[in-house]
Image (cartoon, rainbow, N blue to C red; front, side, top):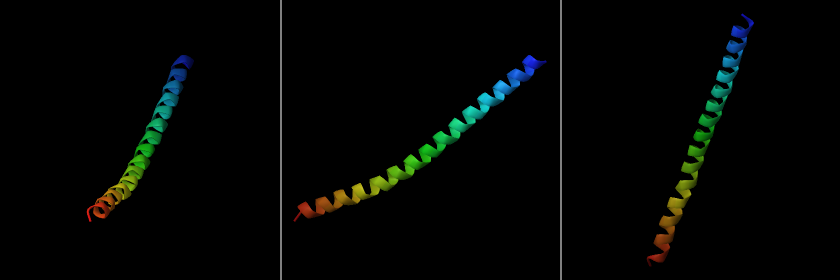
Length: 56
């Protein structure tokens, strides 16, 4: 019986670790996505400004 409880505790601990890693990865993906969009907007506007400055 003790072995069975030990396996359950090990499985629960493993599940908790995996769930924590999934949450961390999901948060990192959301932050990276926001940073990507925030960084890409000025680059697009800057490139448009540079094209406008070189055209005349």
